[in-house]
Length: 291
Ligand SMILES: Nc1ncnc2c1ncn2[C@@H]1O[C@H](COP(=O)(O)OP(=O)(O)OP(=O)(O)O)[C@@H](O)[C@H]1O
Ligand SMILES: O=P(O)(O)OC[C@H]1O[C@H](OP(=O)(O)OP(=O)(O)O)[C@H](O)[C@@H]1O
Image (cartoon, rainbow, N blue to C red; front, side):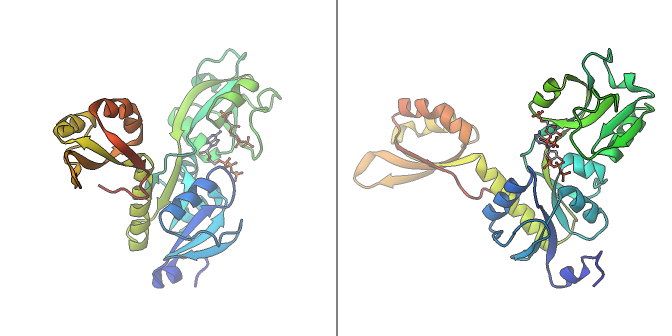
């Protein structure tokens, strides 16, 4: 089998998937795969491989995974928006995963008098993501010199090594601590599962992850409600049209009602449910939810 080919795996009906070997993308990716019914306990750190159902899971740095996916050596990878941009994976299927949210920004020293990224004309920009940075400034028609750096970026402006950085920010703490200001936001980023189209195994994985992600926001709710208040209950929850209504042994005036609600909506309505006369309220988190 060609090393840069997924053909052998494909012939066996397998899909080759990269999972992060380290960093902030790793734990949630493994948790999601596990929730979706794949056994990930065989993963032992960078370079290890394990079979999970019809997936061949390979632990890699996310940016190496993106490069391998771009080269056709993988079928899918857990990466993030900025990594996908850096390795030009726009043509691949992409499922946003809703964690590791950050914003990719251009920042410079807060005392340099610049107010906008256009003020960087002729300047030097340091970044972990040289390709997307080159593309961003070229698209904006701004001539800058991009310097690729591997380590922490925040100190490079104060040290006079660059006029600005392109980096991710979440809370803004690193920017404040290093007396940097945001000149512009390039893109909101989050973890993503990026993959080739047309493989049944991957469509199944994608469907499972959709169900697992939707279930995290949902609660399966059971309660006893006076029979004559069911219409009020339906009005209380957005999109609740036909709850399951079950008789209760020996109770003519009460019924059991089961339905799925958004987690935050359930908590917001809890006092109203009590006001309605609901009792024996139980809420559980489903593992999967598909409309
Ligand atoms: N402070 C942050 N909060 C939330 N998400 C972030 C933050 N910083 C970066 N990210 C996102 O998490 C992704 C992975 O970050 P991580 O720190 O694990 O990798 P890295 O240090 O860039 O990787 P490597 O060390 O392999 O180069 C980034 O590509 C970005 O999308
Ligand atoms: O806005 P904040 O919440 O402060 O987060 C931003 C910091 O987080 C990331 O670094 P990371 O924590 O990955 O460390 P690194 O600098 O070693 O990459 C990013 O590169 C910033 O340095």
